[in-house]
Length: 198
Image 1 (cartoon, rainbow, N blue to C red):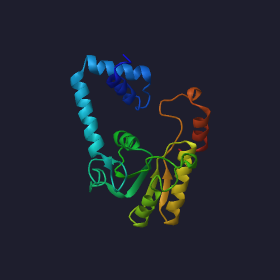
Image 2: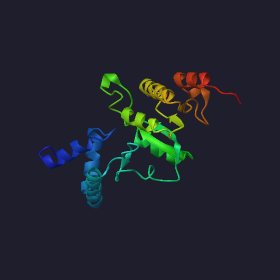
Image 3: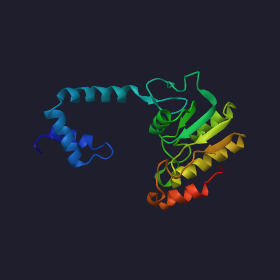
């Protein structure tokens, strides 16, 4: 099989996907070529079209095929509420699981000086400009509960304070239906410290 460079190139290309190692890439390649050539053709067309046409929304930075995404151009959304997330996947998760009707800002990362990701690299200058416009009344910080996510949330909350904008943080802790004995200590500690009155 190694004498087939085209086959090898396809396997190597598939390895760029998260969680896809050598064996998974080989399995996918062989499946597409042996059992689903039509699916392979459609996949190749869709991928080429997406790479060619999908960019970032100029308002919120999420992935979009137009200059301004559908969420940002929707007049029914609440302009005064802004939810800050790390990735477009976070927007999709919030949209499918909640009734949030505000706006979004996608960082496409989080502050991580060791990785060369400072405020400019994740678009915090663009976020500051949106805050300065005076429309936003509350920023909902929905970054991940990691060290970098918490540092990013803190940085943005300080930005918001300078412009008298309320900054709130989504709750983190014990998931609904979860049992305490199976929750990791960091999550349990965060949930315990973040308790609220009932």
